[in-house]
Image (cartoon, rainbow, N blue to C red; front, side, top):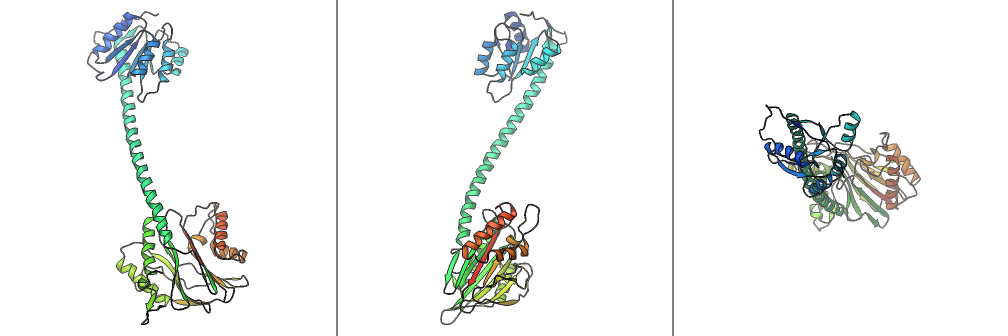
Length: 422
């Protein structure tokens, strides 16, 4: 046990500094505890005493003090051992630990800091110095508690954001199901033709849409749409457009004309796109635009009348495996009013097929930043010339994944494969 002498300057300030703070004084000497307790009591602290490290540790388990003043040399558990055990206690708030010692060698001070002590006071203790060290400890405690409070606010905010995200993610999952329901049939067989559809969003929901609708007798309407942007607003735009090209409510389909006998026939695809362009600019308050390829197919003779509005060129694969990519290009829909669009015709023969894809395929990048492009598509179609129907799209996605190094494509991927058997 080391005797403690308290040196006090006559000018030592005794104004309260510890209102609301608690201090634990740990020393095996009752006299020394009384001297320290009397002093810190005068400064406004709530003071508790412990005569050993073991007793102090039990008190800290029940109620951690803000500041600990502990003698180093005590029988049983000494100050260093108590400090180490104190640091191992699970408490939310930090406790500031000051060791009182006659040791002043650098190695011993280093040992104390390594054990978890925050500060040292060398005996004999000066009251002003003790007050200054306690004030420094209080500043650290204030900063720590302010940081803890801010962390709690951040944690609560993150929890709330997570709940919002989970709710939004759940809504997006339902929206994805609804969007996928817009393409009710991914495969359709006709007397002498096979139709396959692909729709794969890059996120929960996307801006691509493909579909078909019955037209005049032995005629079929095909459409492929790619709305600018991604996400919810693009998906809502595709849902609106799906109504304009509906296969179930033909009266609302702007691509069809109802005849006197109640049947329908296709309107010229170029005129239909002009109508859609006016509808978007006049009736929809949106910054979105979209590319479109619209086709009327004669299922009997394989003749296709098409109009293109900024959508990628269709790729025609002949029965011998050769590939042609033809089209007129054109402006996207919803950018400029009064735009006219051109029609063109494609004649399919027995064994021919036509592939209509969004630019999510040709503009898909590999890890080096090189795009798949039209040449890559033509080469792939030649390699897959023997693959038919949905299996072709499965192979397309597999090859695109291999090219990109990931199946997480940066853009939506959609397509129509029409195979004519003649």
